[in-house]
Amino acid sequence: MSVRNKLALFIIALLVLDQAVKMWIKTHMMLGEEFSVFGNWFKILFVENNGMAFGMELGDGRWGKTVLSLFRIAAVGAIGWYILKLVREKAPLGVVFSFALIFCGAIGNIFDSLFYGLIFDDSHYQVASLFPDGGGYSSFLHGRVVDMLYFPLVQGTFPSWVPGWGGQEFIFFRPVFNLADSYITIGVLMLLLFHRNFFKDKKEPSAQDGTSARNEE
Image 1 (cartoon, rainbow, N blue to C red):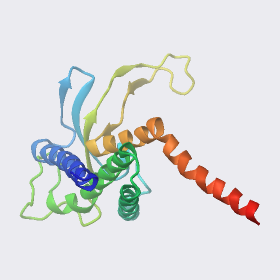
Image 2: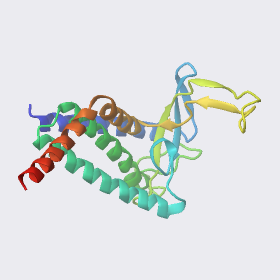
Image 3: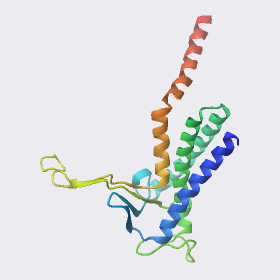
Image 4: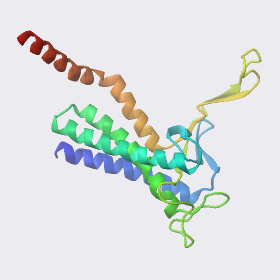
């Protein structure tokens, strides 16, 4: 099987898994509902957000959501083009699949933003329906991203002597995220930890070429 075919199957499998989990959450849980997977340190907690990974947001209101959705589409296009370039150049498979993970994560969350507002009704105080008779809860580009993975590994209270936070409760890890966020995080970590030399090697020949050109002059 060619690298392109393997890559296509890899991307499709990850996207199907991400969307299957999100759609199950939307059609089986109400917003804010949770259940434990492993004790108190791994829970499924249904939340939605208008923004980026781990619930971060860009600006306020619909304009911020629109800008973010359009930026995501442009970024996905650029990443997809770069992956094809890497395949043509026969880059190491680890590099190619690391970018494929980032690509999958971006597409997974874009799909929520583009279509979930159209195909689902609201999840507040009810379990959402897929393709409801009255239409979705929002418009194209303005869907909310579904998050559900929650790892409150450590919970406690800051000591009274800690400036600003003394006496307040803390939870680590507080953000709720989804599989698409995980794909992006894993892809970036793989590039940073295992494939930094790939980018260094690509820079060195150009520097040497410049030196050779100056010597010929």
